[in-house]
Image (cartoon, rainbow, N blue to C red; front, side):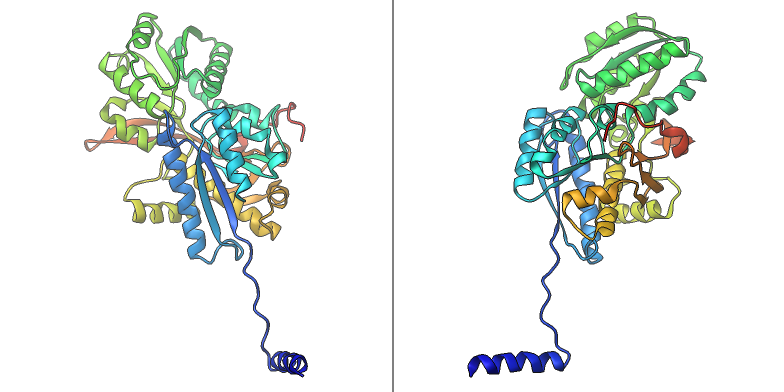
Length: 393
């Protein structure tokens, strides 16, 4: 009788319009293997801040298609082996949508394990062409500019510079050497001569021996591919030893608000690509910058803007897929057009490269304050070279 009474009560409740409680949707778990220690930690801190900010804003709005966003961070130490361990740890804990690694070498190390982990990886910093070239994967995507995209805009800039002789100083790891090689190829194609190439190890603190060689080389221009604390230390010492005032200097990924704040007036005159700029004139960016300033009382950096755009891409894919399963999100990302801080941009299906506009700026002084001025803007069609034939998805 008790069972009959209980069944009757349920039927009466349903007839009265009551419905059984619905289970909450699975959370959208984002894993962030990134640099928390070492020379790239300052950049890892920025990426984490932006990812957590994106999650916080999404959750305040009710989640992503009803899914609460959860973020967990692990230290990749800027090292491929440590990066694999961090990625595996996060994946085993259920955080199988990965984002935020700083080093391209670590990003590539993650890519070899994604099938085993049933995970996907969205790059928001890695610039190595291999990510969307011969190492491309159906589970790996890039929402930031590649080196190839940067050099698509560096070439017209360099063509207009009068300096004929150049030198290179670049960090001795995958990204630095790739950047230096690409600049040399571009420079020589435009009839310039590269007189000297130097590759100091990550974590170098004393750049005096390198600066002496650069100054003595007689080069009129200098390509700098250093990041994080390495870039800051070099820029300060280059000014101290008179190098900045002697050459035209282009910093690959150096001209960012955090770097310029650390270097101050010693950075005035340095050119650089701007992966993201707070003054990008889109409604989404205006909203992002206003909210960021309200929380942090400062402008977002390159890495923060790009990381936020990567999260926007993931959120849009989850909404389209109606799922937080990594492979379903990956399928939704292919060919997806996303409304981001850069405007409406598309994740190219052929190689999983986000087609983005790109920018070049220069550090200047205005009313006694050091600032980055965006001087050149290139649309996505100009800034995004065709897919590499080496990519076989």
